[in-house]
Length: 287
Image (cartoon, rainbow, N blue to C red; front, side):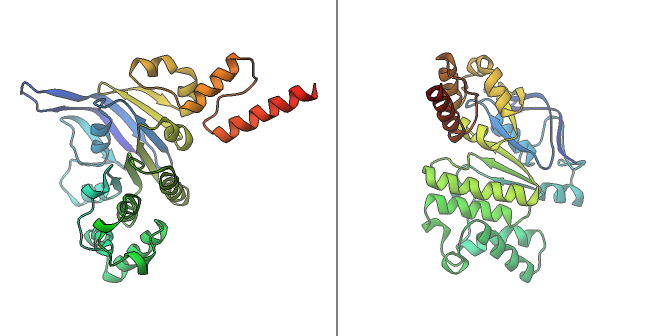
């Protein structure tokens, strides 16, 4: 069963001069096995949306259910449903708090009621998955790590909970290209291995195009586009521009080449576009 939002609305500072409605009657379902990218300009409502998915915020109108269980309920089933949704925040220093890497990652499994042996196994498995050598990092302070390593600790802490739904808020923010690629390699490995749902909040259109199977475009507290990323980036450019969004550079390059007579197709992969260009060149030389 999915995460389901039905007629969800939410307003910050309601009844004050600073009142701001962040979500307007949102309906949404996200199934396990989907990789959903959420994009939108600053203030569009995308962060408020994903905080409802994780149970950090509760709707003022409507309902949020995970696998048929209302997250707003105060019972064991609701707690279990909330634990099935893991969230990695944009800045790992906001999520990391323990004195050692081991204790930080162990916090979630212990709260789930795992035995000491089960917790130890979950920590070791999560660290291995995140590319953190146990002997090297387990007893180190997470606050003495690099930004990329801290991001790995934050991801490992969520992975150790074995969530069915993983929310990532700008996981590559502030990372260099190599560290970003490594983080997404781990995310994709988890996604493919466990068949979980991944919800990625990003400003990076290339990430959305490259990894997601589904794209949500949020503007003014509403989901204005919902579909396959390639289809949206190819056929809804004007709608994206109207809400201060844009298509990935590789799509712009393909469009420019098409306008100059090259028979290439739009693609999220630069390497694929390069192959198409070389094929066209070889064909022209053969003629």
